[in-house]
Image: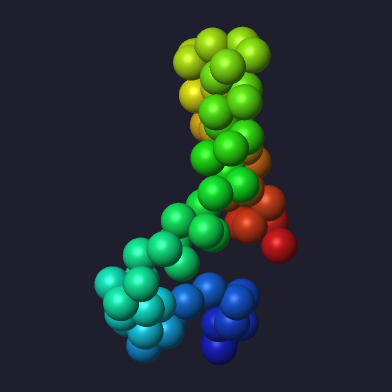
Length: 69
């Protein structure tokens, strides 16, 4: 059976993305900025451990949703 492409990066696209980040790391920072800001605000409001727990829960939910889709 053929495996359906689920929109993930293949080896060639991953290499290209890595080259872009090496060329201009600001692109990676701009991409990650919203997540960093949310983590910082949750940390400021509730502390480090709740912020870390939020990251782990959201990351786990993203993995589960990706597996289900």
